[in-house]
Amino acid sequence: MKELSFDETELIVSKTDSKGRITYGNELFIKLSGYSEEELLGAPHNIIRHKEMPRLIFKVLWDTIQSGKEINAYVINLAKNGDYYWVYANVTPSYNAKGDIIGYYSVRRKPTQAALETIKPIYKKLLDAEKIGGISKSEAVLKEMLSLVGGRYDKYIVSL
Image 1: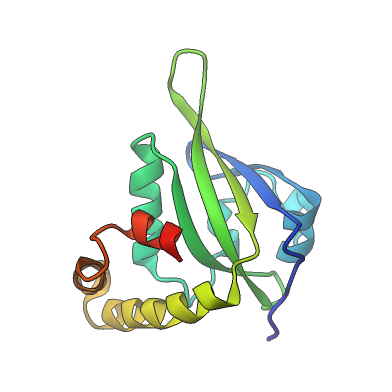
Image 2: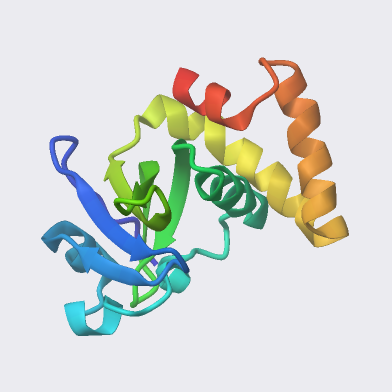
C-alpha cells in the first residue's frame, strides 16, 4: 500500500465522545481515511488504527487525555483501502459546563521528515517489544529510551 500525503498548511480535525466514538471529522479527515462521513460518525476512532502503531502509545495517549491533560503524539493511520498516512497529533479533552470530560478534540498536522526519521525506529522497537512481552515489555523499552532524553513521552515528542 502507498503512503498518503497532505499539505503542511492543512489540518486534520476530528472529535470523539468520551468513549472514543467519532462525532465529527473535517473534510480532510474523511478524505484521507477513505471512509464516508456516514461510516465514520459513531465508529470508534481506532477504525483508522494502523497495525504498525504501538499499542503502548495509545495507552499513553488515553491515560493522558482521560486525566484531563493534552498530549502530542506521532501516529500512523490506516485508510480504508490499506493506504496509510503519518500525523503529528495534538489531542485535548473537551468539557461540559460542569467540568466533566465529554469528549476529545484532535488536530493533526503533517509531521516533519526529521521527526519521522527519529520516531519510526522507536516505534519499531516498541512493536518488537510488544510482540515479545505485550504492553508491559514495550513500556519498559520506552522508559529506558526516555530516561536518556528527559523521561516523558509527551515532553520528548514536543522536542522533535
